Length: 341
Image 1 (cartoon, rainbow, N blue to C red):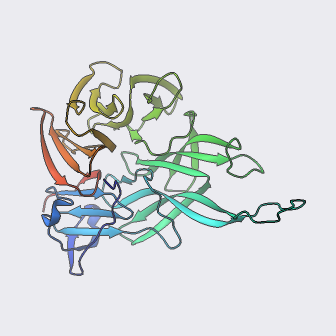
Image 2 (cartoon, rainbow, N blue to C red):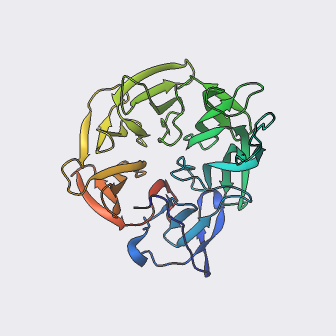
């Protein structure tokens, strides 16, 4: 199954009210069309692909990357702001070529040149219908908006002074971007760069949940960072942490992306809510976990490792009943509430 698919939309423009009186143009399209995506009442949903798609009950809005960007296969995850008006995403751009030094080589310069790239954190505004970009990195990981929407957290790979982005000449950082002034600050180091796992803020705005990768703990472990003190603690073995809206749970993938678990932020009360290990056809979870704003449901992306199929599944946490919301469509990446009419 192709994990990231290009989104399509029709030409008829509708209008939908968003928070803070923002009004953006949405394209009318049938949500039942091939079951590629779906809508939720009083909500904006973010779906993925080589382009991104915002879906509200009135229609959808396609977001494409800025001029010159290069789509990244299995790219880092974007983040939808709490008010549904912005999307933060890792963006890659070409910046030239690295030519091989062929002096004193008997066969001359027969080898191809290597393209050079930079990666930035991009923030798209549905109000302005434009991108702003921040930084200049070798790689930028998955994004996470703070609960108040004023900051974006992401992991990044920096080139060392005077060096390029070759292996061994970079350092790994955890950046906190302030959208008000465009400046970044550093959180505690997170170890080897792994840019695609989900990263998540606590609702209190003082903690982050990330995936750490070590040789001793495979495939990874969930760490909680207190930003003020820089204290860090491990709470579970797994990947793709997603903090619940009320702050009492962290959802994550475990057992090599074959199960979905919940755990309290202090590392207690772990419980399994979905197990794909016995499901025929080789099924995996991917692209993180999305909470409903009322913390009653989870949306999970499942794909068939040994086949062509994939689903977005909704888990009702009270009954632990799962329901397919879309089939062979776009992965779900974000869910923000909008006020009732």
